[in-house]
Length: 330
Image (cartoon, rainbow, N blue to C red; front, top):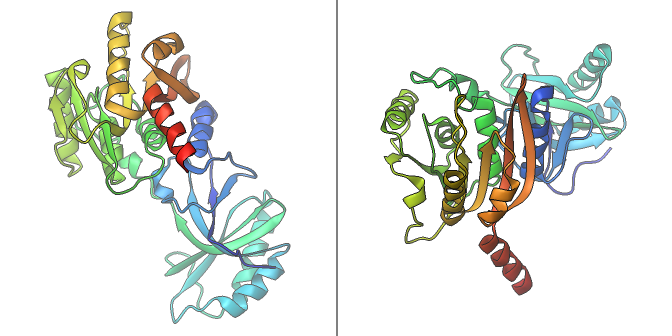
């Protein structure tokens, strides 16, 4: 039994089959790896409420081959200082009885009062990669579910789960000074998810009725008015240069197809506006992306019945060259 030499976090994850491609794409963007044994183990400290696929975050303080090894560690290391606690199994052990046994084995060795409903400290135990993992556990809060209750919904808008994942693809690392843009924002579904995660983002749309709906939705959740009326193809980077990220959900209509020249103009505008662009489309547009100067880094398909959306993570050729130049300098 040993503790980690550097910070280690274990994230239990899960997805519906229809969203599995998007789920794996988001894991690659956030952690640079796909899940093993129902979890991701990483040195990256990510807020578990960011993702619709992350169930929680275990801040690992010890790992061992048996629950008894963890229990011995917890008996010596855990100091509650009068607070109540609970130990819960978070992932990896398929047998229900084995999960409860591990919880009891560890919980009995912690000096303090257990509280099953509202503990002041929550500890988690997981089984992954042939070992047990233990630490303080933070549950994910499904903020995106609250965002389903919009005063101005729209039938073809992205669902909040997909929108939140798309934002994470565009901005996998939230940091001060980062800027994002949604140049075809519609009723503001992507804006709401981004703002709720503390991302600095602005939105544009050519349709004043859509913007009216976006403003009502933003105000409903107590968010600032960050939208403006504009045709994205006329937009240019500001004095600070291109944004760090853009989300472009290409307009979709059940009765018509977006003309190729309009689509190309939108893709070219997105490349001008941001270094990293996540494109959501209902069509195969690889040729148009290449023509617009966008290179596909990764992709996923999201299905709902027979309806399918494609989510493409792209960068402009300029960003590609700049990254190569920076790598040579380093």
